Length: 283
Image 1: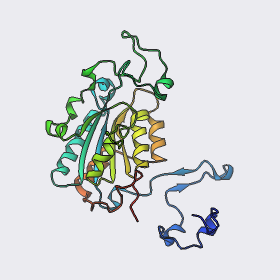
Image 2: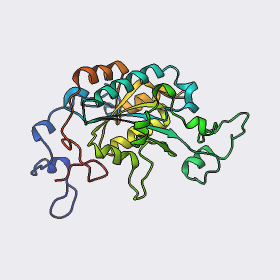
Image 3: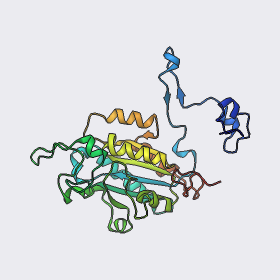
Image 4: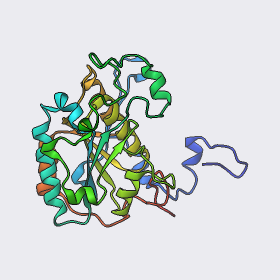
């Protein structure tokens, strides 16, 4: 907020101005999703977590299956049963709601495919020996590795409707249409989705990146902690970071209970707009 002279107001000054976008009764109350560390410097470290719960309001909701593909089957074994349950629950809910959808992606970076960006520089050019592949930026098993895990694969109808696609960057939103818009974002906007539930692989790379991207685009983000996995040692760290910054980390059972007992379809555009990339509502 700026005053008439164009200077940025202090919080104290701003609170004295008319506030078009804020409920001031709520704004001045203490947070119940925040804590300090007693005795720490300036009360740090601080802790935050999502202020909302899934059943707080009606929602329009999408299940995102992030890179759940045959290339990663070895890492998906423990979470596959939970993903099967979630896909079934969302398909059931979708049958009676226009505010539910499911999307699948497959990581499809290939050796020498012409893509060269910061990810390639970060991983570096080495580690691509067929007998002992190390570089995680690429699919090693060809077309077979891109197929969705058979237990949770999209149907022919879901594929035909465009709900399965290939991605070449970490977050699921970073695949683009010819006009430069995000493929996934446009699919979700067409249904006025306002909440995304993320499962899949790898937790500390594609899953975490998708969580941040979804939050930036205006979606409430749910990350299912026992339905994501990684090949690295960073599983718990990634879940902690997600839960304390942009997402609500919950269990499969919590999501299933919500979808079966508490889910209510929200009205289109009730909480999220589609005109602006960050999901703000016009006006």
